[in-house]
Length: 393
Image 1 (tube, one colour):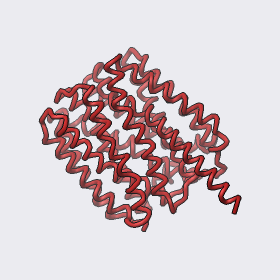
Image 2 (image 1 turned 60 degrees about the vertical axis):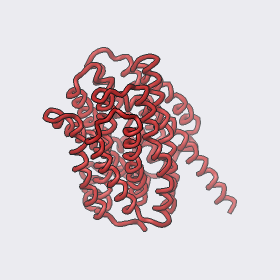
Image 3 (image 1 turned 180 degrees about the vertical axis):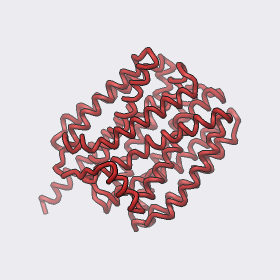
Image 4 (image 1 turned 45 degrees about the vertical axis):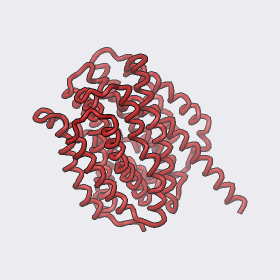
C-alpha cells in the first residue's frame, strides 16, 4: 500500500512538472505564432507568405513521419533535449536572418522543431497517465499549455510596440532556457523504460485507416487544423492589414480570444470521462466553429467588441473539439504506440499545408474574407467523421 501511494505521488510530481513545462513551451511557441504572417508580410507578398507556410509544413510532415526512429534510438528525453536546442537555434535564426533564403531556412527549422517538441511532450504525458482519467489529465495539460498561449499575444504586441518583430523571436528563445534547465535537471524522473513500438509509414497509415475510430479522429483533427491555419495565419493579416486594427488592440483581443481554452477544456474532459461521450461535445464544438467562420466572412465593422466577441466565440468551439480530440485519441492508444502518435500529429502541419494552399488559391480570385466561407463549408465534413467513431462511454 505504501509503495502504491509513493508511486502515485511520484506520478503526480511528474505530471505537475510536465504541466509547467507545457506552459513554458507554449509561451515560447505562441509568442511568434500570431505575428509570423505579418512579419513575413513585411518582406513578401501574401502569396509568398502562403508558399512559405506550405513549404515549411510539407517538410514538417516528412520530419514527423520519420521521427519515431529517432525516439526509438535515443529515447524520448534525449530526443526532447535535441529538438529543444534546434528550436532555440531556429528562433534566433529568424531574428537574425537578413535574406529571403536564410529566413526560409530558419522558418523551416522553426516549423519542424516546434511540431516535434509537442510530440515529445505527448509521449511524456501519456507515459504517466491512465485511461480512466485521460480526459482530466489531457485537459489539465492543455489548460496549462493554453495559459501560455493566452499570455503571449499581448506580450508579442507589447514587444513589437517597443521594438521590432525580431525581438519577439529572441525573447521566445530566452523563454526556452528554463525549459531546458528543468528538463536536464529532471531527466531521471521523466525517463520511462517503455519499449516504444515503431512501424513503417505504410504500416502506420494502414493501421490508422483500417481502424474506423483512429481514421475518424484523424480527419476530425485534420479539419480542426485547417480551421486553425485560417485563423492563425490569415485572421491577423485580415484584421491588421484589411480592417486596420492596430497591434496594441489585436494583442489584447487575441489574448481574450484564447480564454475559452482555459475555461472549457477541463470541464469538457471531466464530462467526457464521467457522463457524456466525446461525440456530443465534438458536434457542439464544430457547429460553433462553422457559425463563427460565417461571421468572419460577413462582419466588416471596425469594432473591437464585435470582433472580440466573434473571436472568443470561435475558440469556444475550438476548445471543445481540441479537448475531445485529445481525450478520444489518447483513450484508444498508449504511449508506447509512438508511430500512431507521430502519425496523428501530422494532422497539424497537414491541416496547415492544405489550409494555406487553399488560401493561396482563393485569394488569387476572391477577397481574403471568402477564405473563411470556404473553410466553413469544409468544416461541415467533420459531422460525417464524428458520426463514424464509437464513443468511449
